[in-house]
Image 1 (cartoon, helix red, strand yellow):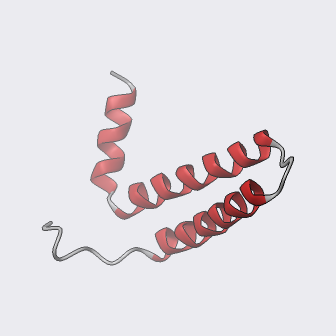
Image 2 (image 1 turned 90 degrees about the vertical axis):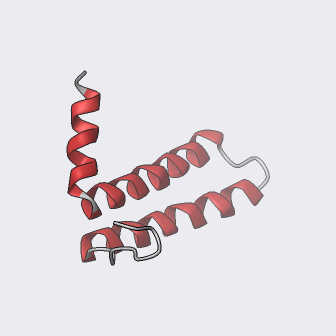
Amino acid sequence: MPLNNPKPATPEAQALLRAAQRDWKTVEVLVRVPDSPVPSVGFHAQQYVEKVIKAVLVSFPLVSVLAMVWLYL
């Protein structure tokens, strides 16, 4: 599929991206707080990345299959 004509995100992908956005906002808030626990910042950053990746995998099943094949090589 050409990049100039993107496929609309599935409802599940949209929900994941909204949740990812909340995680990222949490990261932004935590990094501004003095003495913010680094593990908490890292946790929410990791959650953000995980949800974005899941949104891509949900939207493009072929990518999901290829990722699974690559993981088991």
